[in-house]
Image (cartoon, rainbow, N blue to C red; front, side, top):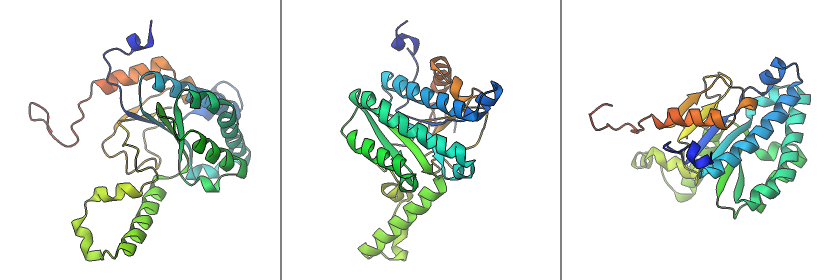
Length: 250
């Protein structure tokens, strides 16, 4: 069955954000090393981006490495960055050819040298792509982004001579242009795999009106069928953004 027929009648979000959880648990359940779970998870991430591109989803943000993940064993962290480098070097040429723009959110300047160099090179190489944007949140923390946003705004306002008492004239949305990627719209749908039901410091500003779906599926088992079921759930929801529907419900 053609892909478009499989997803026919479903609401397709403009921007999907995913917390890819459960790589280690998937591996442990199968008696494998955690690194094998991460390798499989990277493969699934690539397949998911391809699926989103075919469904005409414009943005997909993947939470790849948080500011808290540095607490993991050094060997595991090293493997994660080796996997990142491998996929960027070996898979990105085909993705770029298909129009995938690859971007990063977070303090990637603190990554190991090779991971940082490859990330910046691929980001530059793909900047003209316009089919879909794949955003990798790496060394990312939502609270850190809000703090960095505040500092940039404060410095800008000082340069403009804006006084503290004038801030009441500005709307909270004024913060947006100081975010890491201010041109990227807020996610319509957040997916978190592996049964966890928390945000884990991910996109705290951007997820204010996002629809959340939590699935028991470990990330390495995430596939087209899982995604279709999630989109069925998403399609049943009425996003009112604080307004009312036709019968007056809040």
